[in-house]
Length: 463
Image (cartoon, rainbow, N blue to C red; front, side, top):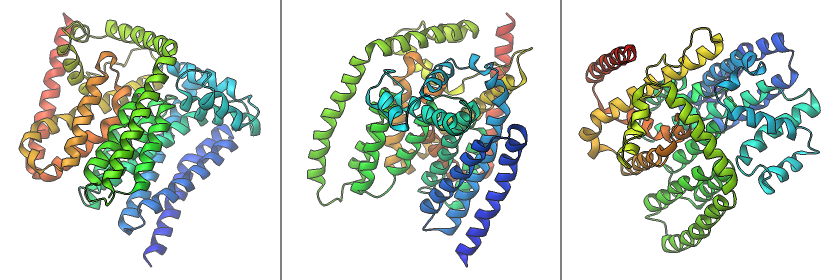
């Protein structure tokens, strides 16, 4: 009876989502490949939901709802931006999009998917980002072979689908700490206001990385098994094809999983020995990749330095001043201020800019306000609830801080969102411990603080 209701619920979600996504695409674009992609994607997503929620019918319904809601929002956002992307106006926001699209456009003429795999992951002809090149290249190849050209919308929807699944794994991670209803409520907040939403339509690799990190964060909460450990190491290998530095940092997750979850494992001594044997060559391989790709990495860093310098010139004097601080103080200050960027929330909106670009900038600003609030609550109540926080979450929080500090030399929001689910889990854990009235009062304080900071910004900008 329960599963009959679940099947009906799933069918209803599919019908509603299809009407809101497929029909507009069909009418506007007559795009058969988009409809095909959506149907395959939806059924794969529901299959994942049934796997993750197999032990609890309420969890299963919540996961299907989360999946459907995020799909409607994120896919619709991709559709809204589609016109700007096809006109290439949107590329002004993120230069990497031009590069990824250009490589995908060349890979669409490959002989087969195996040829794309060989050119990217195996031979590494593009030096770096081969995982992103492979995923975008396969989409371009399939579209070119069976339909037409290299539709940007299809590539955008691919990124959006990874963004949707981030929310699914976040919900399952929250379930280790709180009940179904509270986990659902806070996951919906994350769907609506997080950077996963604002970055979901852009043809970049950062959402892919955040997706794999969200899986890793979920997996380290599970009871120890060799299968899960191998899965974590597999994710680390995959991440090497997206960003080597992210793969190197990800090594922390299998290590903390072994340290905390394998304490009662029968063969833990053997496990420790094997892991040491694996870590040493893995570290050597990563550094070897960095050294062999030094030319590409140097070019990338130069590109980021140029981008950062231009960004600083366009911002208030505070950002430029932070980068001039002494070593150590600079990195700490940049790490702290990164948690409120972009600030103020309307900073990127420009008079005369295309509507969709201003919409995107505004969504980034809303995400920044939301994330500032998350970190504000974490900072206010961390000390008070420190002893109640599970050890695993404390270790993950330390990793979160180190990850942001490590990126502070050339820090942009999209490079650090991979670890944002960690701080959000802490926020939800703390919020669940606080009486509603206390949380409401602190939320009002946050609003006043944000308004005050915005007012000071306006005054300084005037001078």
